[in-house]
Amino acid sequence: MFIACLLITFALRRLLNLPRWYPKLVALWRLARSDHPGRYAGGSLTTGRVTPAGQVIVGIYRTDRPYGSGGGLAFLVRDVNYKKITLPSRDSDLAMQGISITWKKGVINIFNLYHPPNQGHLPAEIFDCSDKNTIFLGDLNAKHQSCGCSTNNDRGNDLLNADDDGALIFLNSGLPTHTLFSYGTSEALHITLVSPELHPHCDWDILSSFGSDHLPILINVQINRKTVTSHKKFWTTMDNLEQEWHSFKQVIFHASKQFIPRGNFKHMKSYFQHRDSGLRTLILKRNALHRKFTLTGDREDKVELNKLNAREAWTGLYNQPQNMPCNTVLTSDGKAAPDDKTAANVLGKFYKGVGNLKFNQNDVILKNRSKRMFHNCRTSSSGNHIFINKFTLRELNFALRAMDLCKSPGPDDIHGFMIGYLGPHSMQKLLDIFNFSWKIGRLPRYWKRAIIIPILKPEKDTSTYASYRPIALISFVCKLMERLVLARLNIHLNINGLLLSEQYGYRKGHGAVDQILYFCQRIRDSQNKKTHQPHSCSPIGYVQGI
Image (cartoon, rainbow, N blue to C red; front, side):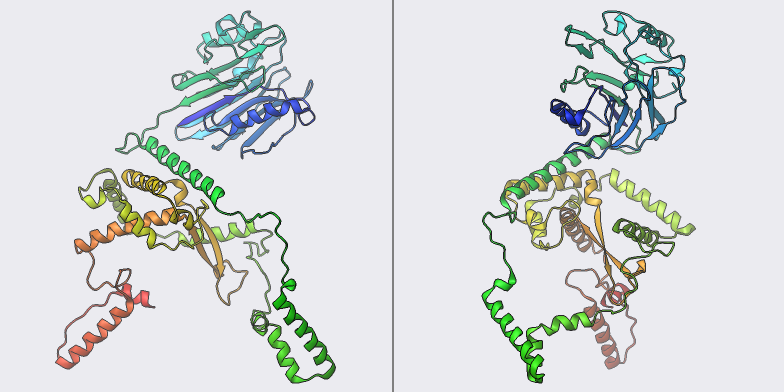
């Protein structure tokens, strides 16, 4: 498990009214959304919640100070689930908040602290929350020479005593974390204390300044997790695969924006159908026929008018269901879904229930046995060159020619034409990603996602969730990878004769109609020869024909 804590202390006053603070805010949010600084940011806030342009989705847990000039503490949490820690109220000047992160081996508690610069001692109950796997970080304005300060104060002595007792251990390296520009001095005011269990797994580093007199501090916590796999570098290879795919996708999007017309042309005149010369003639003729039919009521004028008014469109509208009690699905309490998100949740819950299979005792035994066989196949080599050799450009081009480039893209927004018109270098890069995935036996997580579109079945009730057929839009690149693997599997099955000759369904060059004709012909041959020979018919091919 890897945890990264980014400690940032900043004071932003009247942020929206002071343009000089905006570069600092932009730098702060760049740190919060970059992959290097990490997952958590704790800081001293003096303004309300501000969302600048280009923000990322983070969880914000803020605790305001009820005294002084306002402000408070805040956690900016990303890519992990957390829960706030309820702390008892106190009368001291100490501001404190905490969150807990649950992981496989327990809970890690992180506390964000701030104490104003006065001569008081630290509250006695400050470390009552200390437990296994605990991190205290923040600006306590505590000074001690052992931490890199030029002088000592009472709070610095209190922290040093806590370190001597063995309850908590300093991570500070002695480098200064705060610069007083008016006097040209530097102090180490920001402290990081961890429990003894976490200390061997922690690293402490200072990052570059983003304009504030307080430097951001990066705390890394690396906890090894044992996995039952023969791949010692499994997570490293998975990260490399994700990075390769992410880089390739960004290159595709960048090239698409450069060379695919966006449709925003300068000096383009707006087009109205009524301005078309050919259509304008028909409109004038339609208006004349309508006036004539209104005055005379001639049937021939009515027939001609119906032709001009696109009778087919009216017929289609007339044949639609004329009584639709509800245009969306109903929730469990019988009410109409108020928005698309609620309707999607109702449909998702229904599809999840339908997709969950019920297993009896024998099925559970078979399922566990299949899992063990699958694991053994993944962790050991079969020696068959079909499953070892890398995919070639010839195989990739052959699979790409069999794909329909006009299909809708999946969640990654990569259209089939983007892949179909790749150059030699990009095609080789895509092939390298496929071979990397084939080697480690894993797929990028984004390839496993899909966009589910519910399609209403003909003449079905719109309010019933069972009336919708789910259509999944998956990644085009994932479908291309599936076609490569399928070609290898078909070669292996056909060479070794692992498919029954009677199976016609799901086989290239075979169809359910062929199976039915074969079965009928054998019946006639038996009748003509007066012999009775047993024959089998694959139910797979028959079901497919239905």
